[in-house]
Length: 85
Image (cartoon, rainbow, N blue to C red; front, top):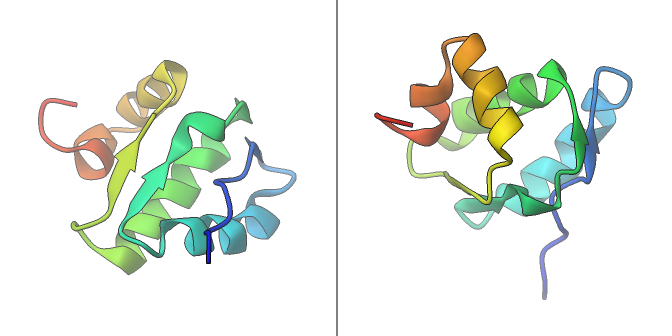
């Protein structure tokens, strides 16, 4: 069974709805964020929630550069992407 892709859009308008598919995608211990094309700071909140529930073993791959910048702005880049992110 293939897992669903990470949502292509995570914004304030759809963050709650996107959380379920994001959790399903990350259930394997890794989340490929390369499909994330449209996002705002709500995407950072979704990733923090995924990290909170999955723990440090969850790996985020294919992180869009601007999402890294948003995470750094909120001071959670190390939490999400590891030290030196």
